[in-house]
Image (cartoon, rainbow, N blue to C red):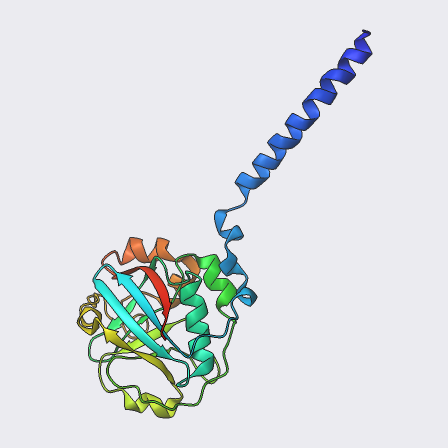
Length: 226
């Protein structure tokens, strides 16, 4: 075999190995978050059952929410898809205001939160009142619901006229909701608690470093109700 033939043979043998190595390097360079299905909101568009339960396993204890689609169809569908898809798993209940409400719904991964921040829902008509234990989407104005949820600690009927449509209510574990950690207070500019914009931008890295006592949602599971 000539010297040139040997070189060609070595190159031919090395090429598959080099290609495999390059592919491996590329895969390692892609953060796991990029492969998360939650980065594609369009995949989460199922119609929810007429009624269903969302069970929140938290570090304070377990909470069960019964959702009635007739109360707020668009909101119920969104909550169903997010809970079923794992959006709330490993998230933080970052805004807890005793005598008012407890709020959660920023994903642990800032890339996922970014993907959902403009997935606005048209407001559902308010057909039920925001009484104690009722669950509704937070929003910042007309038709701005995305992923954040709050649970009322008291009779918040004043929110009815502002378009906050309850999607369901806590049926088990309201005592656990009352025990969610509230020591940090509200966020800026009203207080020194978790800053919502920073939590959305940095996810759990920020919340766990600066507010380690927050109650955590370990996982959310969905059970259709007959």
